[in-house]
Image: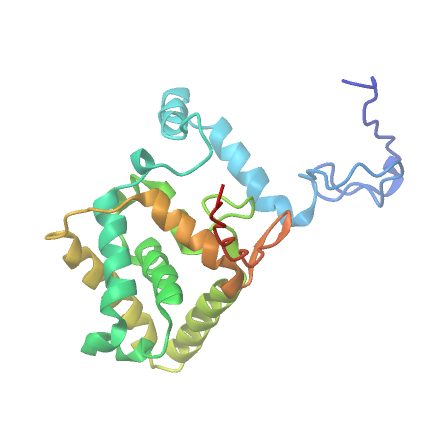
Length: 239
């Protein structure tokens, strides 16, 4: 709208086999960055989803949309998170450590930060639908590319993927111990919630993650997380 321009397509239909999938051989013009191209072959599932929505009763669609309403703030706040669930998870992964649980010996050697991510990943895999009522909690697995609630810990991200990949590969060979361990991790955290009383400041947890982000290869779209500067010594004045 700012400069009054619009995208215009000229069709030459001699060799067109489909107007829906890859009808053009190229786009000529000034690059405006990445664009949404629903005619791409990789967008087939997106097109199907749009078609399914168009065939769904409008009342059902509006019910789904009503569940997508987000708070009018971008930062993660205590009101967005079930503190009992998050607190129990942090307690198990940071303080208890897996070596204290015979069932989790398959994850022995995995650090507390990766364990925190795996616990949330295992909940996505094994958790009941009722446990997704506070989706903001899952941002504590791998952060956000915009730095909210903290930069993406790339090293932790990669280690989580590696553990899952190895677990899947081994399960194909008949050894599903590692994948079963993730389920046990979810069960242990869920059990700990029953007697857990949250008594912590979520902003302190977020600040701790941000301070340590550089240790885990933290990144955002703005760049790498930087090691925090040491606090400046306080100079007392004599006058």
